[in-house]
Image (cartoon, rainbow, N blue to C red; front, side, top):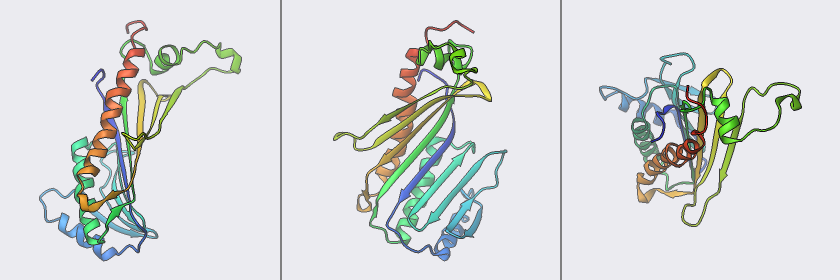
Length: 230
């Protein structure tokens, strides 16, 4: 891997046929999880559109929760410190248990989002890397009437017969963090019959992460070799 990554977000939606949310089923799942020595979620709540299992944020801006709605199970980890492996286990374990409880035959879709940060290797700031190394920005800032405070690119990679999933990649500077490049990969996957098990759910999350930290970072690294050393 050409960079040391700091993954800040994992998200996964398991979409399923619409149906009512039974709080009793979710609470029973929560109680079962509490039988373990280290339950993944400690709080249970019912709101207007479903049920939520969550953790009290360990730091400002952190989120750690799973939402059970009428047509989806949504996992959300933001700045919670979870590793890829830990996130995958939560999705597979809780997604599988809820699918069994609801007697689901299929997930009609899966959406996975991974967000990470890296520091440029040869440019003083992320903005410099994106402006000079990636975009080859040649326009005078004065032409826009004000300085450019942030830049980014978006890559849309549609599915193919070999790889039916789509990737949407963002690579951006962060105005409040000059050294960090923000990268995101949002992947959309086709339906998954649950008779095949949940190995594909696991593989899809891992593939989303691997594409972002593999080909995308390798492409960025090729553009990160022309600047001056810090």
